[in-house]
Image (cartoon, rainbow over all chains, first blue to last red; front, side):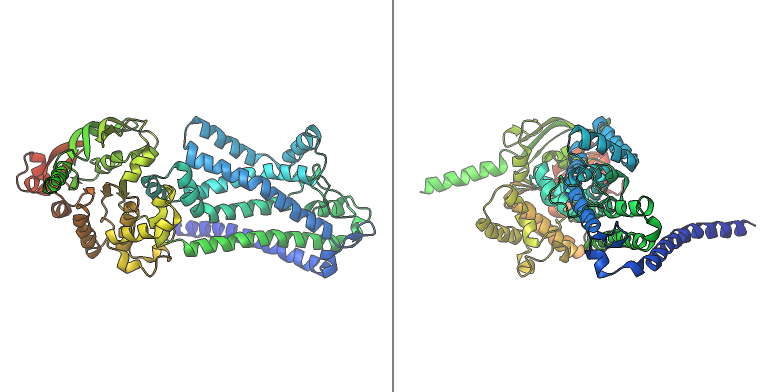
Length: 282
Length: 267
């Protein structure tokens, strides 16, 4: 009887694992089948035409890339700096606990709240307006806690012996951090940052009110211009465009491109991680 | 001229036998509320090998980490008493630890080369202390020769330090410590992670190093203390039980606890 229950338990657990894989496979397969017919060189490189019922997604693709790069510029230095402070300088105490609770709470805030905060603060209060810059700042705040936690984890994985060895040679805290700890932690930090940026690429809510445009006739020329972006483009085509039932194939194509983009990010992160594991010898 | 030569000889003797490298006075040490060292007083002579011996948890590693103030990197650690080195109490918070650690090198229990090349490992200390690039090569070679490693690595200076064997890595760490031209070398169970052959090489090295350096070596290996050291201190539960010339301590221990330890009755 006990054996039967145990077997049942294992089956249940394996089922859970399989469900994850099946869901992922189903999504990818579904999107690939529905979206592939829409894919073409033109789809990737052309502007939308005729009220977005024809043409491509070029400006949305470029807009998303701009948003990701901008988010990286905002969130990575800030996040890594905060992580270095928490792990190498502050080391424990009430203050660090408060900061850490803050970081975790920030990570739990729904992305739509970030979007509304961005609208209220960056767009209105600071008067930056709906723009690439506002969107990048909002997305930067969104991924900041993720970057901090990933970087802190990577820093904490650096063996204490490296730090001791450097301190014993008379290195200052900053020298230990810069010349020993950061180089060792860097691949882990980069992996974490890429995963965070992959998430930023797919977010709609934070850019909806802060950066995204329904349609722009040209690519943004300054950080103060509005941008199109893949997730928002998909959202408006599926819900608000004039003939949304006629553009299903374009919507699936857009979703497929967005998915591929995010998968490329995750693949890059996985490759870097595999490389570290091969090179790691301590 | 003869007189001058005698003078030099005389001052040499005074330096050797006179002022000790370290004068430890009533040193106590705490991690939080736990007392790890209890009122230790001893002199560590210059250019000799002094072994700190005792069972695990007796405080011997902690004692070593007081001598270069490395204990400070652990939050909640606190030392009381005095440790005199070159006319200054190094427990004084105003002492510049960067300068202190340049003069007091350290080698750890497990070889801990940085994930850098052989050359960059040895050059690390001189670089952070601002030695110019063109002087580095000579310094690195000197340090590697002193650590008896030069002949084995001279053709792979720019290979990763992790390509070396465990024993070579530990000698690299010794070279790294010697590169800042310290006066003292602290060694924290430097052979505990090594095989017997590599251990023998390190012990031989320690015996030659004492011609130029004051060596303080922590070990829980009785034979090692007997083989390499001139003086031995026996610590038990944070207390200094006995401190004497090594031969005397091993053949005529004065304290029954030392005798029991030598007989293998503590592990």
